[in-house]
Amino acid sequence: MSKPVIYWFRQDLRLVDLPALIAAAKAGPVVPVFIWDEELGGEWCMGGASQWWLHHSLGQLHQGLEQNGSRLILRRGDTLKELAQLLEETEATQVFASRQYQPWAAGLEQQVRDMAAGRGADFKRYSGTLLFEPETVRTGSGTPFKVFTPFWRACQKLEAPALPQPVPLLKKPASWPNSASLDDWSLQPRKPNWALGWENLWSPGEMGASKALHTFLEGHVADYGDGRDFPARPNTSRLSPHLKFGEISPRQVWWAAQALKEEHGALGGAVDKFLSEIGWREFCNHLLTLFPAMPDRAFNPKFEYFPWQADPQLIRAWQQGQTGYPIVDAGMRELWQTGFMHNRVRMVVASFLTKHLLTHWRIGQQWFWDCLLDADLASNACSWQWVGGSGADAAPYFRIFNPVAQGEKFDKAGVYTRRWVPELAELPDKYLYKPWEAPELTLAAAGIELGGNYPTPIVDHREAREAALSAYATLKTLAV
DNA sequence: TTTTGAGTTGTTCGA
DNA sequence: GTCGAACAACTCAAA
Image (cartoon, rainbow, N blue to C red):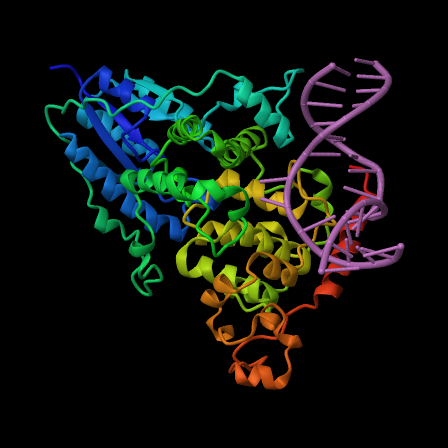
């Protein structure tokens, strides 16, 4: 019998359309492995909410492998050491994996390659996480793009992504190495269990991902263009955590979207708008590859001199959804309670933190990193920098979201806001986003005591706006 | 090399 | 209530 090969699962927890797994299956009997390396990423090791998802996704992956006559070998510890140990135990001659794009990934891949070579084994790396490899998208003069629209246009002109590939036939090795037990890893919170009920909100794993895609494309994409901006409407895909863990490939998304366009030409506009969001995922990963310091330093160096403030009380009020601005508080509480936040509201809360509170975007990035199920290093860093004004193709500094206007515009009936800020449930629409303007009697009738069961605004919008504008003005004179 | 057109997501003010 | 302009130039990408 031929020597086995190792398939090293990373953030590609699926069986369908996985080029590296297909290659592994061709090369010999496959030992599928996942290594829980808690330290990997250092400061950016996996956040709490994401660990909950990982637990369930690994369970699903294990089931999927069993249905294909295989299994998932779990190990915990340093990636390099565990892979070396597995090579020794299995006498495998090759290690297969999908390429990742975090700043530490390329170095780790090189270390694995060297370690394997030292044992007479080969390391083989394949794409599969992005539609386009960062090296392949370049401007006419050969430089990487720094503006989204021309970037995405250039992507469309490249050869279309390959069609998704089916699950390969996995041959069993002569014997299986030992596996750790998922439950021993304590990836799920216990005391307190802040993920209570999340099983009803999310279906981690390949099947859940596929279902989310089809529910979206069959029902909700039609009204994506407008609907996606309204947090109470169902017109977003909610695919982000699935994509983050690689439970579905962007190629599956791309081709399912193309098929829908062909079937219903009228949906083309909405589908393209949705695909451009997949484009932003690509763009962010390309930017992170280009500028690995993205999570830590301003892409626009001027912003390294921005007069950020850091008031722990204000930061805590933001984190806990106690700012006194209902749309902000609704978003922050949705995040805490579900591990997710609607995109429109993410922009509002991020603008509030960076501009109203003049707090460094890194503080927000770190909070999101720990709380978001879909926390992705590239998207999180690029999006925070975009809001803060320091990113590529960033929002202009004078774009300061008005939390009252945003609430009134995008959640007029208050369905979203009242759900997450129930103490305001009885407040009439007219005052929902500015309870401080409501007459005493109205507040009393709604059971609201400002400064009691709901906070007075922690900053005044007009004053905060002026302060932000003048803080940003200080950058103008800088020559960096 | 120089020139030209364009650039995710907004708010406020004044006519 | 509605609409257009200002916000502030700057950088990017392509011709």
